[in-house]
Image 1 (cartoon, rainbow over the protein chains, first blue to last red):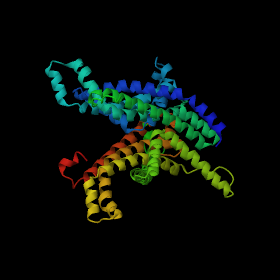
Image 2 (cartoon, chains in turn blue, green; image 1 turned 90 degrees about the horizontal axis):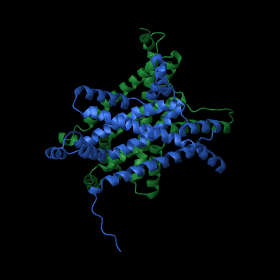
Image 3 (cartoon, chains in turn orange, purple; image 1 turned 90 degrees about the vertical axis):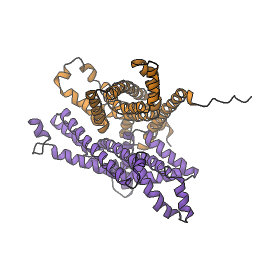
Image 4 (cartoon, rainbow over the protein chains, first blue to last red; image 1 turned 60 degrees about the horizontal axis):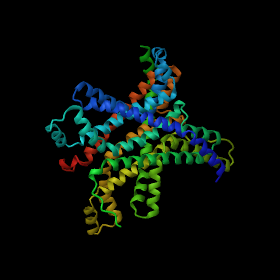
Amino acid sequence: MDFPFLSQTMITLLKAVPMTLALFSASIFFGGVLALLIVWMRVGGNPVLSAIAKGYVFVFRGSPLLIQMFLVFYGLAQFGFIRYSFLWPFLREPFVCAVLSLALCTAGYTAEIFRGGIRAISPREIEAARSIGMSGFLLVRRILAPIAFRHALPAYSTEIVLMMKSTALASLVTVWEVTGVAQRLISQTYRTMEVFLCAAIIYLIVNFIILQGMALLEYSLSRHRRAIPLAPKA
Amino acid sequence: MATLELIGFGSTGWGALLLLGALTTLAVTATALAIGAVLGTLIAGAKLSGNWLLVAIGNLYTTVFRGVPELLIIYLIYFGGSSAVTAIGVAMGYEGFLGLPSFAAGALAVGIISGAYQAEVFRGAYLAISKGELEAASAIGMHRGLRFRRIIMPQVWRFAIPGLGNVWQLSLKDSALVSVTGLAELMRTSQVAAGSTRQYFLFFIVGGALYLILTSLSDRVFNGAERRANRSMPAAAMGQA
């Protein structure tokens, strides 16, 4: 074991962690907002909006993220009206392109997860809320959203971990996050196993923290379902 | 019209190459799924064995290969495999770099990843078999091999089909990452076509559309397989299976 090399590699890779986390959090946030919009279109009852939402989910879940990312990064720059528009200073940045494609892709998956959560709500709870005169936004805020989110949480945490892994693809559009830096180290040193181990440990730790956080959230959101704890023994 | 010519089958068209790329993608995914089925069965067996060491190995495998980015695993297999092959070459007296064939490296990498997901699918399917049937098999004197062949295998396959369908879709999309090794599958072909004609948008849209065709066709195949595997089940139970 070559410990100086390992620790040097680890330090180099750790410097790229903030970039990975920035990609991750920005795409989870924008993807989540977009997913809410798609779910609203999908279950709102308007057949045209519902068909658009279905088409969106089909396209973004059915094709690989890499091709979507290349479409955004290389494809959009091809059009003069985009290069000369006010959006170009943003779309020129690889980071913005990566976040945009990650968010568009996760929105498709997340929308289906949220829809599953909504479908799991018992119609009786909605009837009860309506019978005491709740409607519209109040119904969503007090009844639908909390229950649906709780039901969706286990599947959503899986999606979040998948998203964490997907940030690795940003290295292919020249964003220097952990996998990109690892690849550069591998091609410079040809010490594949050591570099891989260091990068893998970083990803495993981050994913472990994410999963623990989600489990904690799930636990604190299901307080009413737990048995009343026994009084601690003296 | 120029656009149609570019994606058509004429001498200046990329149509034939793109279709060939799509077939390569299917071949990589099918090979990966077969490798993953072997690995997944072994790992699921290890996790169900009850032996603490085997359980720990199984857990380590599924945690690592489901928790680390696919791209990193492809780099590991491709570059790591190539340096291993080079080392063997040097030991046998051949000087210079030897690369691993990109098809084999890609299929192995995607297969190792899909093995981790398949292990969980098989484990879930095994646990879905009712205990009573296993006990009944033992009670009439079936030994382990016979019980595995007659009782466990047919049911595991049936319960596993929906999960395997998901793993197939996942591997199909993961196979796009194999393009980084230079294998001319669908992703790589679209990239090359886009680069050499400067029609990035067109070729990535066409490539994406071909992926959509592949995923929706395989969805149908798996739905058909599920119906066929469940044809002996009462209609009411089908919804649950």
